[in-house]
Length: 535
Image 1 (cartoon, rainbow, N blue to C red):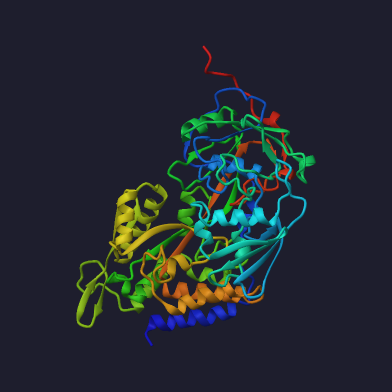
Image 2 (tube, rainbow, N blue to C red):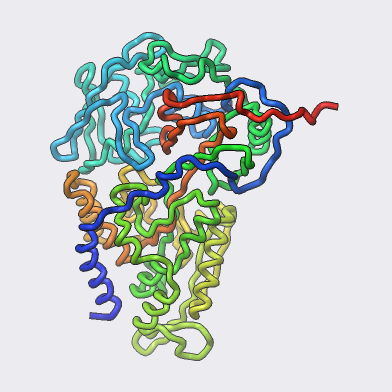
């Protein structure tokens, strides 16, 4: 047995002990409320507050919650529509429109629709509406990627929905944070909703829906809608208090800072940044080199590049999830000494005295020269790649950072013209890695084909509540030890409001406005300033 294989075997053995330890409970949950400043271009406040609470919307884009990809519209839709099931900031499922769910084998699920949910036109929300919404979501660009396991869905009576899957998945409820629209309204510009707010007749404001169970505790009688397009126009409107709450993705190329006079609430997402290795690369066919990459990335540096709005992750599970094994993950913390040790033990050294490492394949000397593909439009990703290249050069590994615009990046990635690539993916709430790591899958860019890994992923998805953590640990350990991918971070996105205006907000990825009935809104706290735009 080689040294590297012995090392991997020892780590697997150690995992069996660590799986008994407490799993990670994300420190991120402690700071869902953060006063501060988001990185990016900053525009100052110029005019006085207008004393009303307003959201931005863009009516030239879809206002249908199942198809809306515009984040401004998604924020509005959170108030007009209700999710089937809520998934909180720790990725735990909570009943909502569906109050109960059950399955015997993970292949067929029964959902029970709660009573008392009413559409804005007065019709009762039934199982037919829920089944209809799931069916549309499986064909929607916004939701279909997470619902590829759904084979069929139907209402068996007014309160029961049956969902059949193509494969066993005991975590289906975590995928159903999907808005419900009224049956037959999917083609309408404003489909029927049952949320705590409804559109006014002119669609320029939202008013409390009096038949909603939380109507009496809504913090605002009216929420106004205005339309601003483009990042700078939106930012200016926010700075001028013409809109009062926005969503922001700090990793986006359109990220703009929202200044100091704001409350920024970070919430966890399933957006994972990771490294993929080309299995046809001569360099990364070497197991030892791939395995050493677990230790080679300074994840905390990447988090700092995002202003702290990310969670370092050594495993392909968000650290906010109870499934994240913090004790095991720590073994793969950044350490150049560890990288050096792994490479030396695997027989990699500077054989020809040129200052760079080589390894021997029989009598052939193989020079290591890594082509690292990265999207040029992301400063965060480019900086992370450069930091990695500098670190590796200090150890004698040659790395060429290949920065490409989006079109060329995608072409090279899909063609396999790289050794390693910085990638990003939005996983489902079940953290199913099938689309990244199973043969023939759409995002399996590294051309991984490993039946043992397929079995471990399937065992994790089909595990019951008592066995899930162990199954997840086994899957994560195998991925780490094979190093087909190296996880880096999970993004945290931002719900931004003016300081002191909103209290009690608990945003989550699929419903940033979740629990609005518990908010306190003090619009008078918006800072007043002189209108400097007047002559």
